[in-house]
Image 1 (spheres, one colour):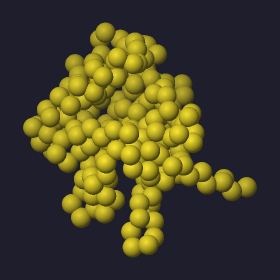
Image 2 (cartoon, helix red, strand yellow):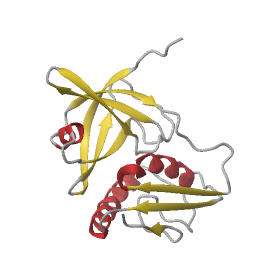
Image 3 (tube, one colour):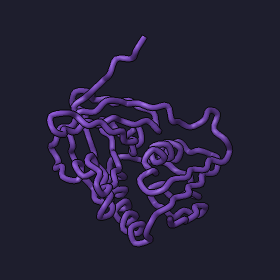
Length: 196
């Protein structure tokens, strides 16, 4: 039996500039106060173009315990219609989204040493996975290998993420192993730096 397509009106409530070409978009779902999803899943967004809707998948970057909202981390691609459309949006915009979708998830049971590898905004689904691990006191080792094109962009993103983390901490208590830094901070004691 085919699964019924679920499309919701997502309300854009906040935009954070991480770098000149990367922004985080925060959406809420007034029609669905609990938008339940598993870390690693994505949503299919719809944007208008010449009388039709263009659909594109974006991974959910926020952990599932952030109530009532999701965060999408989007890089503006030269010549990319959908990413350019996002960068013209303002808070208050309502966007149709289908989801959650996808089967990308952590193995069960978890291995003793988890290794995450990503470049650029590819870190989005990994953030959603690592946050719950830190909050729930994962006893094993976590290594994040993150590749970036320019160290300047990395520093700017880290500074912006630190500011956002401070805001998040006011409303969300997250326990974590003191031996680990947060996933939002690209440099960790066991992390490797690999510029493109």
